Image (cartoon, rainbow, N blue to C red):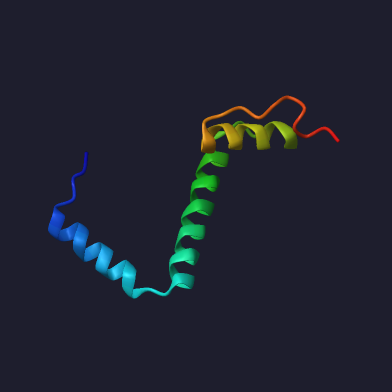
Amino acid sequence: MTDTTREIEEMQNELWMKKTPQERARFASAMFAAGIKTVIASLPENLSAAELKKQIYLRVYGKNLPDDFFKT
């Protein structure tokens, strides 16, 4: 499902293709970082570092990390 017309979608794609691969990678990285900040802001502040990482992983990838993931 999309709310973007085919004409606008083609225009957006054309604009993206004019950017260098480095510009596209920078943009994607910035969007991912913004998403992570949003996830972190939605979590309780008192989580341990390990629990914070587990919760970020769960929210970003939709899967739980194994309980022993952070043990060495």
